[in-house]
Structure formats: C-alpha cells, structure tokens
Image (cartoon, rainbow, N blue to C red; front, side, top):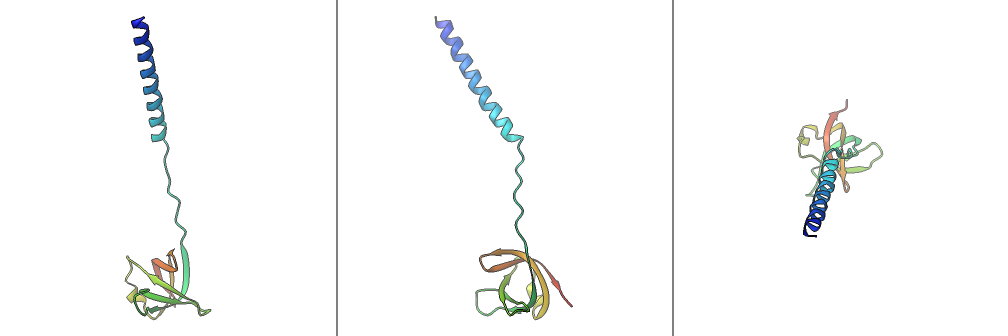
Length: 103
C-alpha cells in the first residue's frame, strides 16, 4: 500500500512538473510585438513658445496652434520657419521625432 501511494505521488509530481514546463516553454515561443505608435504630421510656422507650457508653437495655415517640443531635436534651428513636424501627441503637445524645413 505504501508503494502505491508513493507511486501516485511521484506520478502527480511528474505530471504537474510536465504541465508547468509545457506552459513555460509554450509561453517562451510566443513573440510579443509592441503596437506601433501612431505618428502625426503637421505643417506650419514654428514659433518660440511663451511661458513654460511649450517649447514652441506651430501655427498652421488655418490659424490653429499646436504646442511642440522635442527631446532629440534642437527646435531653435527651425524657429520662425515653415516646417513639417512628425511626432506623437501626448495630450495636446506634439513631441517631434523629425522636423523638415519647407521652402
């Protein structure tokens, strides 16, 4: 009787270990792909911002203004020029990834 109980326990432990191992390995084979962030492109006159709200303001041809800032681009280079800005919005601020001067 003792051997029977030991045998059942061993089978249960091996079965549980196999189940956990299978779940772990099947999870490891799945590749996760992060969704691509939505980029927006705006065109207009890039002007220095006033106050601490934005680094710069983009004024489009319809008179709409959008706050623009960037952690990777020196926007001062494009101040008071017509530009095309591509980036991602966080709230109402466009964080610029690329800026191209328009002639």
